[in-house]
Length: 184
Image 1 (tube, helix red, strand yellow):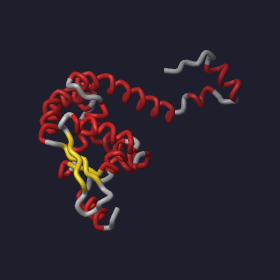
Image 2 (cartoon, one colour):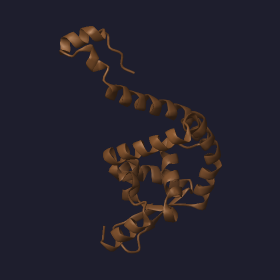
Image 3 (tube, rainbow, N blue to C red):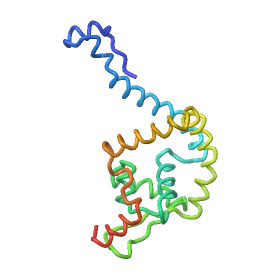
C-alpha cells in the first residue's frame, strides 16, 4: 500500500486541498471496498491453491458450473472474467489439458466456440466448494446480518452493473439463444 512521505497537511497545502476534503466519505467507501477485497482474496486463495488451481482457473470453472447448460461462449467467458481473448484462451487451454473443460463448436454459429465444464471439472470444483463456502462464510457473509448481506449484495450488483456490465454476458439462456439466432 502506498504511504505518502508528506503529512496530509503538507500535501493539502501544496495541492490546495483542505484536510476536510481528505475526509470525504467517498474516499472512505472506496478504500474500505479495496481493503475488504484484498483481504478476502488473501483469505480465500490458499484453499483454492491447495486444490491445485489458480484463482482465475477457479473463477472460470465456477462460472461455467453456475451457468445454465454448463457452457459459455469463449467471448462471453472472456468478458465475464475481464480477461483478454488470448488470456481466456490460455486459461481454457490449461483446463482443457487437465480434462476439466472441453471446447465445442457452436452448431448455429460457425464463428462461436463454447467452453463447457466436464464431469471431471464439476467434480474438481465440487470437491473445493464446501471448504470455499466455509471460508466465504467465515470471512464475509457470516460477519453480516441477513439484512446487511442483502443490502450489500444489492449495492454491489448496482456498482458491478455500472463498471463491469459484461459480468454476466451469455449467462441468461434466453439472451444466449437470441444472440445465436441473431448471428451474434
